[in-house]
Picture 1 (tube, one colour):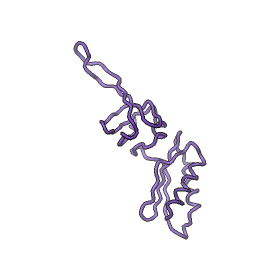
Picture 2: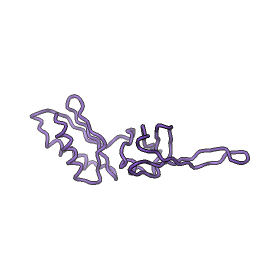
Picture 3: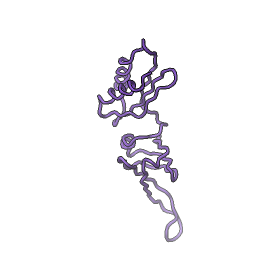
Picture 4: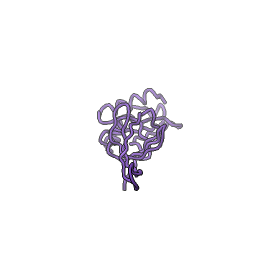
Length: 153
């Protein structure tokens, strides 16, 4: 399987809609092509079909047989690009970073880092008892090992 040709076809299909972006793609044993695409406002089935058709119709099955799967990343897949983080601002997120594990709300994202906010109960600075404190942390993308959106029920 010609990986350069597959990558070119994937990029052509995604470039037709500027709201879409490539999350990941691979060619697995047996010429199984997997393409993960996301969009700034989600990914509808029409776009999945369009991308799939563009790739499939421009590869020759007579020359080399293949299977193709185009989908959006699952909810358990780690976020890996600034666009994915920006799309999920305001949602609960669990981050494993070089320093620690944080679960909170993603409140900002830019091209270098993200900001997560969460609440904790801490001892009062004066007197007895505890009070709720809002904490924030800025995390550079290079420090993120895994970032999963938390589904709220």
